Structures are given as structure tokens and as C-alpha cells.
Length: 310
Image (cartoon, rainbow, N blue to C red; front, top):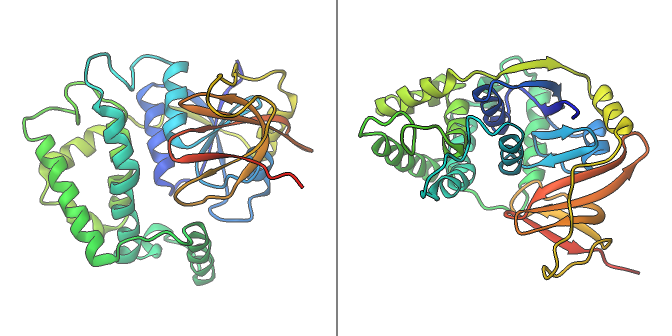
């Protein structure tokens, strides 16, 4: 099997989520640093237009969205599991809340209060202005709370998490780490990058102990790779991960479709439908540099639409 390649950048919270998962599993992986904002020609060559960070590559298969990426990593290396065995099905629900509500309170507030200079310490004023414009374009039409509301939301959420850990459990759902822990930790990691915002965590000692425990997982064993090398890996690949279009889900194999996120960064990716189930959609697309690639998306949080014919 080809190597696992993570396309990410250092300051990306969702990238840190996946990096810590790879660390928990002790995995070796290739690291491709992508641009923080558009233009991203090498990213588009592989994803077809999806520009959220990170994304994951194995050969000519590209996985978008960390919820799906983490499921794939769990299949590749089942132990230690991200979904520990047992009857409790709350882990993915808590993870989805953390990827959404918690993230959209913690991360914008960190930038608003701590300032992007605290996040990109060496950035020029021109870069920061361009970065703000890029993120505004990704969130056009999306309503987010202002700083006073976001702070109130965040402090409520931090209180909930502190209470969850009050019985001395090492991780959010008990003695074993799970996907919910990694979805939550990314937001606290981003807050910690700004001393002014990190101070908001001080009244929550159990949460800070948990954060230190999560940080100890590290990032596994990354090895640098250029984006050109990653594109060459895709072009040289023979075959793709197995996938199929299940019957009764409203679309047929071979249909021309677009897939896009429903919240932010909703740039549509066009291709031919080759995989469809309740959890995942896969489209095939051709790129002059990357060759024939399969781009995978989760179903939750995304929509699949038939392309309009002339």
C-alpha cells in the first residue's frame, strides 16, 4: 500500500487533530505543507477544488474532512482504536459537536481577541489582510456569533467539559481515548497559541490536565514531502481503494455530480460518481498532472448534486 500523506499546515486546528491521531497510533506518514490561503494549484490538482485543510492522500485516493480521514486511519491501523468497543455510541456525536459548535466559538474568538499576529507571529500586515479576506470568502453567508456571544458560548462549553472530567477520568468518555477527545483538543490547542486567550482556560484545572495528557501523544513519525512529489505519487498509482454505489440512495454509478460542504469552504468539486453509501461519497476526476484520482467525502455535512445538463 502507498504511504499515507497528510496535506496540512502548522497553524491549522483540524490538521492538529489528525496529527495527534497519527501520534496516538504511532504511525509513520508523509508531510506536505500546503498554502494557508488561495491560490493552491497543487491542492486543486488533487482535490478538484476542495480547499479546506487538511486533506489526506494514499496513492490516487484523496480523503476530505477530518471526520472521514480519522475513520480511514482507524481502518488502516485499528489499534489503539478511535472508537473503543462498547455500547456507548456518544463518541461520534460529541466529536461532531466539537468540530462544529466548539470550534466556531473557540477559533474565531482566539483570532478576534488574540489577533492573527498571535497565530501567525511573523506575518506581514499584507499577509494578514489577505488571510482575512480569504477566510471571509470561505464563510460568505454563514452567520457566526460576535465576540461577546462567542465568549459566553465558549465559557459554557468549557464548563461542560470540566464537569465531564470531574470524576477523575483520564479522557472524555472514560479510561480510553476516543475520537471525541481529538475533536475537542484541536480547539484548545488553537486557544493555547494566544496567551491572552489561553488565560480563559485557567479556571478549568481538570481540562488543562486532560489537555496536557492529549498533547503527550505527539505527531508520530512524519517525513517531509513536496506537493510535486505527492502529485507524482497520484499520477503513478495503479488502481484505487475499493468503492461502489449502493442501490436505493437516489443516484446511479457514472452520474456526473458535484459535492460541496454545507457550512463553509463550499466550493463544489465535480466528477463522476463511483462510490456512494450512507457514510461516504466518492467521485472520480481527471487532472493533467495528478491523473485519475478518486476524491472521498463524508455524507454528513456535505451534499451531492447531479450536474445540470445543457
